[in-house]
Length: 249
Image (cartoon, rainbow, N blue to C red; front, side, top):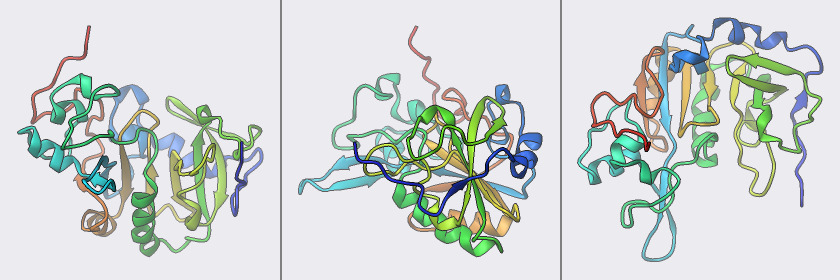
């Protein structure tokens, strides 16, 4: 198998004190809230939805926004919508599709490269330390480009390996197989101006930042986003505006 190196990223050795602020501030993982992933210390938060995909008549891959899926199923679009609620069934999670609406469900555990690059473009304007960012990668990925001996960050519910490098590397931190598009699990600049989290089990990415930064994220045309509160729950059954579908017995 062809492998790709770390590029401009490097492990931090045994010193993971750069992550202490995030570990200390994060809510308990059992709360299943935005603040369990992104430390609840920021002025505002945004949710970035990972797109679904379908093949058009010409055979091209087309990104499908959650708003389109919700509309096709007569569901409401809002910041806390969940995939099983807007599709109407758990069978659309890892099993069946909705031909004509979407063919491939949103990616779990990684922010797709197109959206990651768009997010980086926005975040670059809201930090003075784009040259020095920290990247925590869930150690369960087992990606060969991340040294297994890299020091671990003990985030609530998730152990992560810590790397450092420029903001430009945010889309290719954990590399296992082509096309090497695994995004980091948690990343932030040295000045703590913002923080981004993509949990391994979720189809969304969450960002904590200033109100101005979150506003810029929510109007970025390449991203489907909503402002959200750090206390908002993130589980599949947390949709409060659409019918919640009970999980299979």
